[in-house]
Length: 73
Image (cartoon, one colour):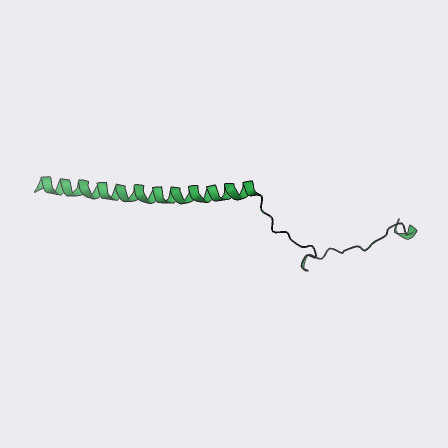
């Protein structure tokens, strides 16, 4: 087929080590952007909630220990 000469135009050879010649468009879908923002917000809220639960647990544990020590004396 290559011998018939029916192909026209320039062929861009693939070389994985070279940079891409095609321009990358920085487009972000608004729906995906909103979902990403929502996931980040939910992740931050979960981290804050986890810290609060941990600190409340430590506080309750210390109160129980203080109560037990007070009643033993």
